[in-house]
Length: 107
Image (cartoon, rainbow, N blue to C red; front, side, top):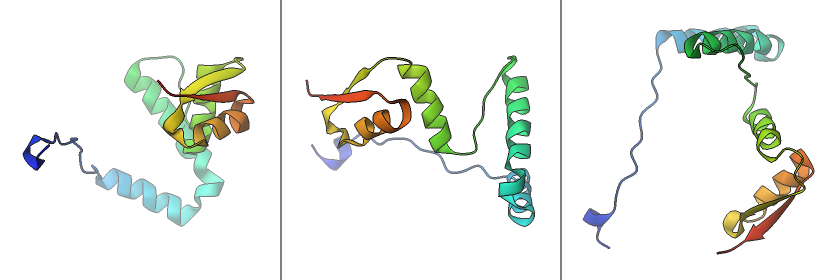
């Protein structure tokens, strides 16, 4: 395969406006730890309004979001088949977050 035959994966640059700079500056100046839920609640409300839905859940971290997502997707299942190429991290996450067992599988 030549370089000209390789398909590029499109990406976009960050879109940072004065509003994002204002929020980041406010969080840094006034203490993210003490006020993080103020931001989270504001985001949830704006997101619900944007989507026109009654409920939305936001978290203060990616770890929290992954934890909730794994519970929602896996539920009470005891085992989940996972790609063998995951180097074990996915299986460790299943055990740590949702007390399930990841079973590596190759096709």
